[in-house]
Structure formats: structure tokens, C-alpha cells
Amino acid sequence: MPWIHQVPVSEATGLLRKLFDEALARAGRIWNIVHIMSVNPPLLRDSIAFYGTLMFKTSPLTRSQRELLATVVSAELDCHY
Image (cartoon, rainbow, N blue to C red; front, side, top):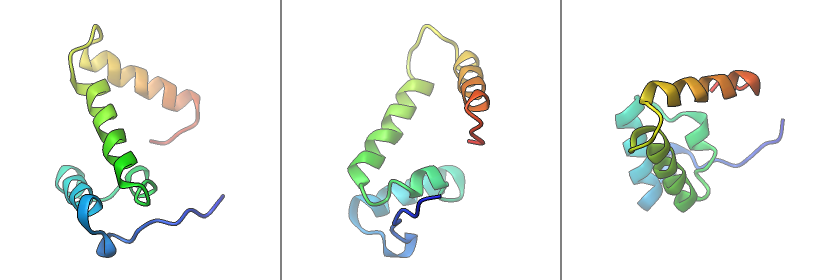
């Protein structure tokens, strides 16, 4: 497995600190999928916004259908997230 540099939570400043604080408030921890993008805070911000749009904004699919679709795709790809 490749090693990818991650900014330690204790060293986060600016936008990254804000995003980490929001993640901690939302989930109580910094998940790996969030931490792995710590070297590029604008990408992390946009990724979180994209996920929010996909899962929570107006859609022809219900929230349950979107969750089910995400679960099936993750299972098919052997992804534990």
C-alpha cells in the first residue's frame, strides 16, 4: 500500500483547520477518506460539498435509494467505506 503524506490534525491551519473542525463536529473523528485529502484543502472542501449535493440535495432518487446505491457500489468494489 502506498504511503501518502497527511497533515496531522494538530498542525492544521486555515481552511484545513476549519474542515477538520467541521468533520470532528459531524462525525466525532477524522475519517481516513477526509484525512487523505489534507494536503489539498480546496479539494477536500469541494469533495465534501460534492458528497453533500449527491446525498442531501434535491434528486429524482430518494435519500434511501441514494444510500442503497452507495452501499451496493461499495460492496461491489470491496470498499469498506
